[in-house]
Amino acid sequence: MKNITKNLQKDAFTLAELIGVVIILAIIALLAFPPILNAIRQTKGKISDASKEILYNATGLYVSDNLDYYPKYNGNTYCVTINELTKGEYLPTKVYDSVTGNEISQDSMIEVNVDNGIYNYNLNNECEEYYKYGPLTKVLLGQYNESNTTGLVKDSSNENLYYYTGTNEQVANNYLWYGGHQWRVLEFNIDENTLTLITQQPLTAIQPASSAWETKEAYESSYINTWLNDYFWNSLDSSIQNNILDSIFNVGIYTDVDEIMAINKVGLLDEEQYKRAGNTDSFLDIKDHFWLGNRYVSSYVRCVYNDGRLFRTSVSSAFGVRAVIKISDITITEGDGTLTSNYQVANKATDTNNVQVGEYINVPYSGSDSACGSDNMCTFRVVSKDSDSIKVVLNGLLPTASAYGSSTTISTSHTIYTPLNTFVEGISDTYRYTGNKIFYIGDYPSGSNYKDVQNEILGASVGLPTVGEMFSGNDIDLSTSSTKTFVDINTIENPTVSNYYWTMNGYSSSLVRSVHSNGHLSDNSPSVAFGVRAVIYLKSGTSAITFTGGDGKAQKPYTLD
Image 1 (cartoon, rainbow, N blue to C red):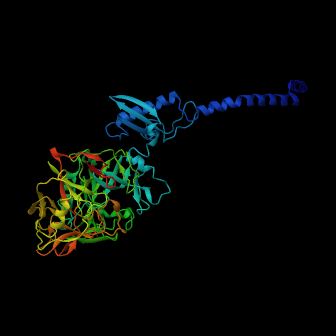
Image 2: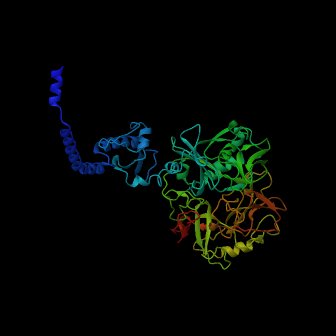
Image 3: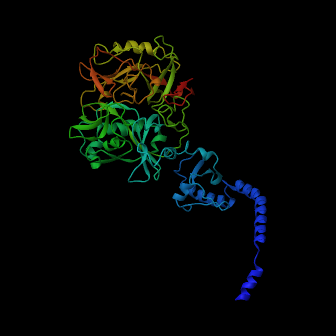
């Protein structure tokens, strides 16, 4: 044992020798550290060629599998996140770079351009703006935070479903301009890549049915369902129709909304959806009367009142109609989702032939009555289209109110035609279809189908909105300028002239239908002076007029050449 100890002592380093070794190693480290650090800096944030090959192969499979319905970012270019690849099991749950050893962020994006079956890839270039402009579900998802109790929140029973709740201050960036209408996003599903939308404005005001529906069949044949899935549906461009999905609408009694479920392309908001959004003072409360899809009892239908309360009223009342649809995801190219800068897809018309119903057009005005402001441009909204013209309604009122006339059945000799004729003379024949067109002037008494007004017609070159047509309700928000809730007041012509405007239709032998600021159709004596909302026809077909600018939204209407 002593010999072993002696040998170990003989072979051991002295303290001086150990200190010398440490000093030498420290000098070597100081000399070597800068190039090592520089090499790390050069590698950090980069992905090796081997890792890129793995990512690109996975991305190619993903895009190939989803080519028919995955949203395109621009042209034939797709943006795919690492998260989408891992979620679809094209990659493991976590992906690491083979050089740096660092995990590759789930938010990293790969840009794929597909041209005749050839795939070209780039990592994190134009797709860096993916969450600003790209598939709308991904854009909206950027608003989500786990701590949210208002704004965008996640459904507690479905991890893929997100919905909005709260006031307009809390839900200020879910506005979408799509297919000629301004919508609010109700919810979206990131697994299905679908969004459910409701029109921000009431599109018309009608009586919903002859009696409250108690069966699916009764709802299917109701006036309001026919309006939504016949009149409104047929007004949409085919490109929009092709992107609207069949959806289940809960139209049962208000205490059990899914007691009756109807499958349609277009439907109504149900009471539970309104409550989920926040009820009174929520972003769905537009301080206007509008119908819900649920009955109260056999003779009453549920509605939202102008003060935001859930209420019930007789089917003989004529309230606003707001359409609800579900669409496949779309690619956003403009906007920030606010009231004055809606999210928007890249789809602009070039002339009056390919304009969409609902889009806005600025028409030059030479009249001396200052009907259309200092810019001498009248803003109209497209109501309908035919083979040689488009029907448009003034997006506002003429500068003075007018009595209707001596009779409830209107003619071109009525008092109200004096301001109408004066107005139309200020619009050049270059733009205006000058021949007579049909205006429906039939009565709309209590309990009527909106189609009943078509039993009488008037041939004229200018007129008023007709009950049941698009934008024949309170879509311009006739409330005072300080309380307007769902329009940008700067886009309305003469917004404070009146809180009523006349329609072409009578109510009875002594009363005429008018639109009220609360969003319902009223009935008044023709001797009363109310607002005048002009309707004219613009040239289309072989005489189509070219647009020189604008994008068709209220803030930037198309401008006629």
